[in-house]
Structure formats: structure tokens, C-alpha cells
Amino acid sequence: MAKQRLVRRAPSGDVLRLEWEGAAPGSEVVGVRFAGGNYGRGFQIHPLGAHDAAVERFVQGARTSRLVVGRHEVKVSVAPDDSSTTATLIGRHHELMTVFTGPAPATGRIVDIFGVLDIDDAPQGMRVTPARSTLLSVLNEHLVVFAEDFVSMDMPGPAHAHRVVPRHRGNRTRRGNEVWKSTFPGRGRGRGRARDFAYIVGGRSGVAEVVASDVDATTDAAVLAMVDSLDVAWSPGS
Image (tube, rainbow, N blue to C red; front, side, top):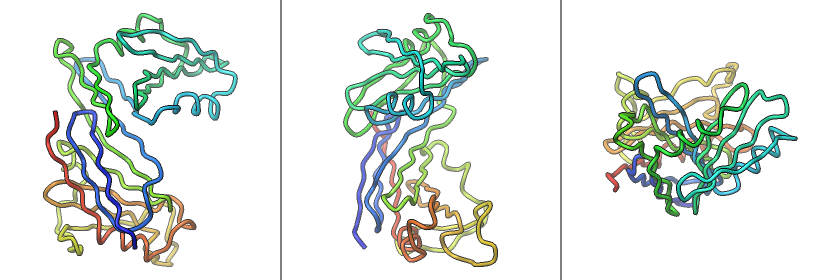
């Protein structure tokens, strides 16, 4: 199987280097959540064009307006029934999206939410950090990569990887990592296929959860080859 390599920068600035054997990367999304005091808000980082595509697919007939926050444009799309509002900051290479439920928030609130974020957008990823004066911290961050055969790899940031690693010892992979498997909810039915399990692959430098999102789009051999060859390595960034 073909060897794949991917380098991405997380919102914290840490750099992820990912290697595996199997289908090429098809799509990806990054999630980050900030919290502090009574405040908590989650964001997703997508490639350019994500806001328009999401609104067209999921919120047809939305009312869209534009704001300027610092040096960035922010698109705000409100559902026709006011049930949700999608606000997205447009960078040079990526888009930073958040969703509000219920009636649209005041314009000032949207400006304040994006205005306290220090953003540096590069081809390998968007760094997003709250201003120090906010006292906000990163509650969690993770990167999800979908291969072209719809096998997903979900990598929590290095500060949060311990939350998904089991306490007991796992089996060894060819790359020298540990692997644990568990039955994926709603699958299996006694067939015991490799595609019916979720896998945690962990080493000294990172952890990933591997799941066949569409069991009909891949094979057991492909899933096992990815798990056996997967290597996740985080390094400090700027």
C-alpha cells in the first residue's frame, strides 16, 4: 500500500506529523474549544469555502451578512427560522467557524468573540490563541483526517491525549506503537470484521483513534494496514 505523509499545525501552534500506509488523505477538520470562568466556546477550522458550502447544504435560505474584525472578514449566516447562526472568520488559507443556537446574537458579541483571538493562518494550519487578558485556556483540541476510503484518524492535541488512552497494556504494532480495539456501537453483529472496531493507536509522541466511517468503502486489510503502520508525532511549534 502507498505510504502517506501529512504535516499540520494545530490551533495551539504544535505541529503534527502523520504517517500511514493506505488511501490518500481526502478531507480534514480541526476542532478547538476555549474555556475560562463562565465562558466556553467551540470552533472548527476548515479549508476555504467551508462556510458557503455548509450554509448551502444545511441552512438553505439563510440571511448572510459580513463584518470586519481586525484584518479579517467574518461571514454571519442566520437560519430562516432563527434557530441557528453560523459565524466564520475568513483567513488566507482556512476558515474559523462557530455556531450559535437560537436567535442570532448581537453583532457586538460576535465581534468580541473573534476580536480576542490571536490568529496566524498558514498553509499547514491556523494557529488560534486567546489574548492573555482573557484568561481563557484551551479545553481541548484535535485534528481529524479522512482518507479517501473514509477511514478517519482523530488526533487529540498532546496535552489531551491521555484522556483517550486505556489504562491496560495494548498490543504492539509494526511501528512499535500500542494499539487497543473496541467494538464500534451499532456494528459487528457477530461477524468480527476489522472494520467493525474502533482502534486507539498510541506512542510516545501522539495518539490517534481510527474508525472506518463507511464500512463499504474500505476493506479489513486496508484498515489493519493503516493501524499497523500509523505513526503520530507531535512537536512544539511557535
